[in-house]
Image (tube, rainbow, N blue to C red; front, side):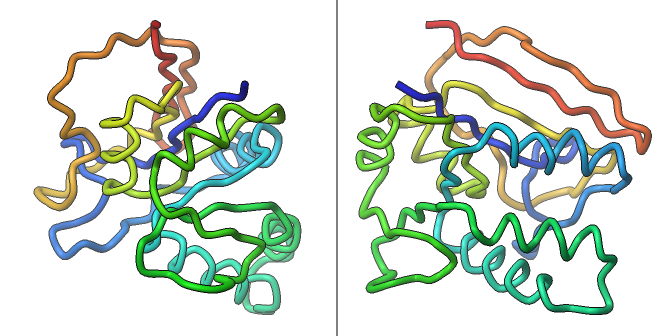
Length: 187
């Protein structure tokens, strides 16, 4: 059985998007690229998304692969990242969504994939899929990038009304003032 790790950028005031629903990119550096994106490429066997973030990420990374205005290291990352298998949880997407992805009808299907052997599953979903996965008690670890800004509103990462206990598994202080915190579920 593999783990499901939710990987999410969170503002100091607990939001994943700004008040307009837009993702605000975290401060970036070579260290963040290595410890955040590089970690995901190493650890992830299957990347899981909700529809909204899937479409955003798909459009960004497929274009990045060929965008000569981007640094070569980002284009190289995009080339490798774009080959990785994905699953997108959606009731509205039909057919082949592209980007090496399969459509899952609900979070129960994510649970079935967890039962398979293989490298861990990493969810880059967004707040809505995070809420659904938490409600179904499918998240084994939270890997959070706590960024040094507040957003004053938006979508909160946590809306779960059930207490669940975690232990700190890893803490990384980055050179741009963000913290990368990994909390493992105590079961």
